[in-house]
Image (tube, rainbow, N blue to C red; front, top):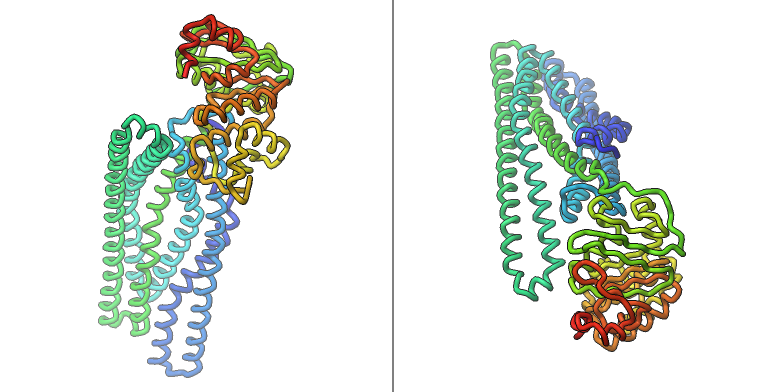
Length: 561
């Protein structure tokens, strides 16, 4: 997708891709509407034959024609809607995948939407955009029905045909104004509902810490305000939809009534026969349904366009940064050179290949920002200095190659719905699963359940404790067996004994591969080859854990528990 992508371009692309299905659906739905229109015409002919010709053969032929019409109506509707709904569902799936792919790309995009809003775009907006596949054929088939009715009435009396055509044009002109208002209000409603969804997702994720410092009530009030705005906008949209539907019914009824009265007056004047009167009254009643459908289509077009424009926000958003093409070598050293970002001030250190380095940060914010920079979550232009692997800045490296070489496991790594095994080994290679489970001390969690590694895990690990989630996340990071691994506070939710075992196992499993752990855990600091002390945004000291404990009071205060 290019940066010039718009909602209109999305709709045009959807129509082009489904032109065959839409053509077939239009023909079938046109046959359905033509059959529906032919039904009152056939009834009028039957009455005409019965009253004027009194011919059993003609009557039998008319009844047979009715049977053909009924069969055509039934089959054309069934297969026409099947074709259109299949195309609609397929197109919606295509857009859901594309929006999800944008959200899952290694490089973030410059889009002012939260993850909950992107989820809404990938579901509701994708479905509503794909509705254009059904809207256009239904619009055309409804127009066919109205035209057939107008022609049939015009053959009986030209005034009847002109009335239907003029009335249809007047109805559409009136409703098109209302449909534009619905489109504008729908865009705002979709945005507000998406914001409310994002807010509640953030609230659920942070509920436990919010309760810890008593912030849950303030968070609930914030969500209530956002949700109230979404509700008020939804009520406004419902009001606009109600006004539209009411106006459509009133105008359609007025047209049908006018056509019926005109036909009655013409029959009274002897201008049309009784059979033509029956046909005219039947068509006047029937034409209300295709007119209603025809008049509702502009509203759905505006809704589809509004949804397509929201999808374009995601699909056309440029990446935060453009990654390079180089690949690092497994033996390359990691160098942080004079990095300034947030609390980091001219931060400079080097980690040699195969080294196990622990970084003890006095400020949690400094550790979090360093992790974000190493993960390439912060664009290279957003901070001063450079991060290099093998002498090449990470902005020059392919993002896929960088992630393969340097795996950063954040403090709040996600746990996915599935099983313990699929969380540890998403790709199903199984190469390091057993070793990772052992090293992360996840063995007791596996042993608790009869299914073992195939034990089910709920979304976000809702059926696991905090320590179990943390160990599961650590096992996944270790199972990847990346040449360089960065861990951020991987043991804050486990007890001291388990932490000591994890530290020993981590050092043994990662021997010969580069490992960086940002932590204040004495067990992990003691297991490291070297400890860097991060204070006031820069490295203030380095050495062995025991030596720093003996000679650095600030270090003792940082790591003391």
